[in-house]
Image 1 (cartoon, rainbow, N blue to C red):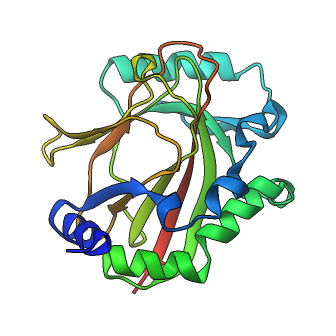
Image 2 (image 1 turned 180 degrees about the vertical axis):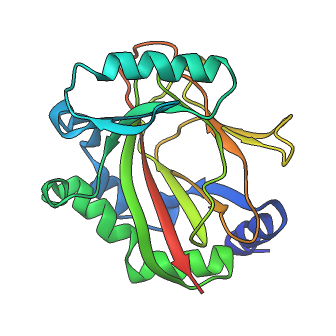
Length: 222
């Protein structure tokens, strides 16, 4: 069985699969080089708590919103708090953001996705970078809608003791099926249509030199 066939079988059986994307797209390391140096002023704090969802750009209100999200997280309620680099005209002028977006919507990428998922990607419906700093997290969710999702890690030298781990759960959300340490160029592809895959990002518990950065993409497919 070839590597691609093995990935396809895993996706079909488990509803998700993860692998080193740079093995199939060798230009990725060059395109993503320097992502950790993107300035803070371009990142927003995206926070979900009982009051709703809001983006904060260098905003003093973010601290209070984050504390409320922590309270909801502690109570077991869906919530999140992390940094986001949105798909905006300004950010598309950043060569790293634009380069990664172009690569992940390229013909070779769409062909790889077809081989792995059995579905022909037709368009990107959502695209952004995220960054998890100390105290930030993403509660269990399934990302319903579109056909499938992709999370591409761009973290260099991440220490798993610091949290920020992607946990894929059982359907009843009572156990862990897979624990993914953020590893540079590791791609997680997961079903968001035929099957919903519960997963979360554990809270980052330290302030390491490494930055926990990933790319999130949602694809339409047929």
